[in-house]
Image (tube, rainbow, N blue to C red; front, top):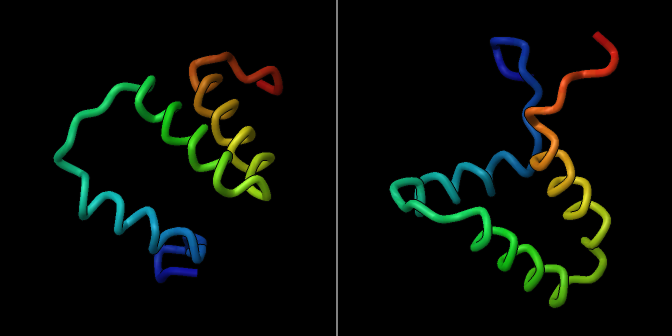
Length: 67
Protein backbone atom coordinates (compact mmCIF):
# COMPACT_ATOMS: atom_id res chain seq x y z
CA UNK A 1 0.00 0.00 0.00
CA UNK A 2 1.05 3.55 -0.60
CA UNK A 3 1.35 6.06 2.24
CA UNK A 4 -2.14 7.28 1.26
CA UNK A 5 -3.56 3.81 1.83
CA UNK A 6 -4.01 3.00 -1.86
CA UNK A 7 -3.20 -0.44 -3.15
CA UNK A 8 -0.32 -0.68 -5.59
CA UNK A 9 -0.45 -3.47 -8.11
CA UNK A 10 2.24 -4.74 -10.44
CA UNK A 11 0.09 -3.54 -13.35
CA UNK A 12 0.43 0.03 -12.12
CA UNK A 13 3.92 0.11 -13.63
CA UNK A 14 2.56 -0.82 -17.04
CA UNK A 15 -0.21 1.75 -16.75
CA UNK A 16 2.32 4.40 -15.75
CA UNK A 17 4.52 3.47 -18.72
CA UNK A 18 1.53 3.75 -21.05
CA UNK A 19 0.66 7.15 -19.64
CA UNK A 20 4.26 8.37 -19.81
CA UNK A 21 4.88 7.14 -23.36
CA UNK A 22 1.49 7.83 -24.94
CA UNK A 23 -0.29 10.13 -22.51
CA UNK A 24 -0.33 13.05 -24.93
CA UNK A 25 -1.90 11.02 -27.77
CA UNK A 26 -5.59 11.09 -28.56
CA UNK A 27 -7.17 7.83 -29.70
CA UNK A 28 -10.68 6.58 -30.31
CA UNK A 29 -12.34 3.79 -28.38
CA UNK A 30 -12.55 1.97 -31.71
CA UNK A 31 -8.75 2.03 -31.90
CA UNK A 32 -8.49 0.75 -28.32
CA UNK A 33 -10.97 -2.04 -29.13
CA UNK A 34 -8.88 -3.06 -32.16
CA UNK A 35 -5.73 -3.13 -30.03
CA UNK A 36 -7.45 -5.25 -27.37
CA UNK A 37 -8.64 -7.72 -30.04
CA UNK A 38 -5.13 -7.99 -31.46
CA UNK A 39 -3.69 -8.46 -27.97
CA UNK A 40 -6.13 -11.29 -27.21
CA UNK A 41 -5.40 -12.91 -30.59
CA UNK A 42 -1.70 -12.93 -29.67
CA UNK A 43 -2.28 -13.74 -25.98
CA UNK A 44 -5.40 -15.93 -25.66
CA UNK A 45 -4.73 -16.56 -21.96
CA UNK A 46 -5.78 -12.95 -21.36
CA UNK A 47 -9.19 -13.27 -23.03
CA UNK A 48 -11.18 -13.23 -19.78
CA UNK A 49 -9.34 -10.29 -18.14
CA UNK A 50 -9.59 -8.22 -21.34
CA UNK A 51 -13.30 -9.05 -21.62
CA UNK A 52 -13.80 -7.94 -18.01
CA UNK A 53 -11.93 -4.69 -18.62
CA UNK A 54 -13.90 -3.96 -21.80
CA UNK A 55 -17.21 -4.69 -20.07
CA UNK A 56 -16.26 -2.54 -17.08
CA UNK A 57 -15.30 0.36 -19.36
CA UNK A 58 -18.49 -0.04 -21.39
CA UNK A 59 -20.66 0.13 -18.27
CA UNK A 60 -18.94 2.96 -16.37
CA UNK A 61 -21.92 5.27 -16.82
CA UNK A 62 -24.52 2.68 -15.80
CA UNK A 63 -26.20 3.33 -12.49
CA UNK A 64 -24.90 1.15 -9.70
CA UNK A 65 -27.66 -1.31 -8.82
CA UNK A 66 -26.32 -1.64 -5.26
CA UNK A 67 -27.03 2.01 -4.39
